[in-house]
Length: 98
Image (cartoon, rainbow, N blue to C red; front, top):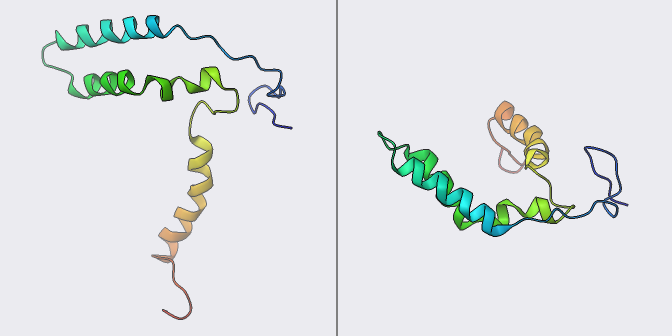
């Protein structure tokens, strides 16, 4: 059975969070408007808000579906040791190519 890593609750017991997409749209539009009126223009922040507007379904999926993690830290940790090994050895090599 899948368990929530944060609280130890069964994922079957976790209820999805209801998201008002219209409210998210209003918030993002307000933030975008404020950013566009700033001088100098904060390009990175504005690009981030526009990405959120385009991909809001993906960005908010963790609120609706309990099995979707909030972040990708587990993926980073899974790849971390592989990257450390690669950095230490310089590359991955097979005996036939060494």
